[in-house]
Length: 336
Image 1 (cartoon, helix red, strand yellow):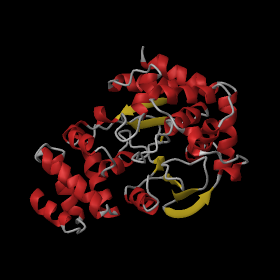
Image 2 (cartoon, one colour; image 1 turned 180 degrees about the vertical axis):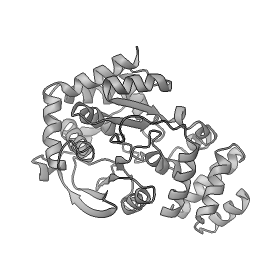
Image 3 (tube, helix red, strand yellow; image 1 turned 90 degrees about the horizontal axis):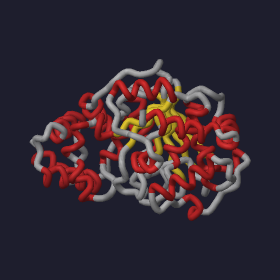
């Protein structure tokens, strides 16, 4: 069956939902040879991945993940696709701590770096956190801190079959697109960053197909899978089963745009230093960008009525030390 699918992809033909489900099911049960997985991922990239293919693959991955219930259903995730190759600091992870300091419940889904210099797992490890928890420990951390990190390999064990091929390819594949749709705690409110403007409507439609509640899909005009500080960001918002698209800029929130080189991090330690400076109240492009993204998180968590109100709250949470306290509390409790 996989050979037929590979031939179809070679001819640049889209896969039917059933074909995609079959392919991903076979791959994630170890039935497909490593070389064929690599070919499958490369040919999908070359063809261009469509919304029905993402929905079908995400449904399989959700079924196969180790799921668990936590919280009261209002928890949020801030998981981007990665794959930008732009090597910025860990903005979505930093902003999730700010949102948590503002009362949002966070079930942050993430991984080590695949196409970047610092993935969320690398950042948290550099901060001294223990990210290898069992479920009992995760629940305790969540109850005490209001933030947990869901290290993808521990919750998606069947991903072990695709990791060698992904690492050899060394750039984004369909699995970058699936992670944001497969939160193990079933988060129905998310800020999802995408590396390609064309994915904005695609992702909000996939979110609608998967019965999500409130999702902001974001893409910076500079190519970032975050709300950017360097210029405008495109947003596709799913709310009340309706999708709305609009553009925001830093200036809309009284913030000046900054050059890209001010948000680059060369390593997890470098990223951590930048975030700690922002959390210590140091005004910078990094702090501004964290505020923009945390503001979006606070908005979908319904702690504020708008992104603008969230941005204002985010600055105060960094400047009054509460964001730094939240990160420190997570690191401490994760090690107990």
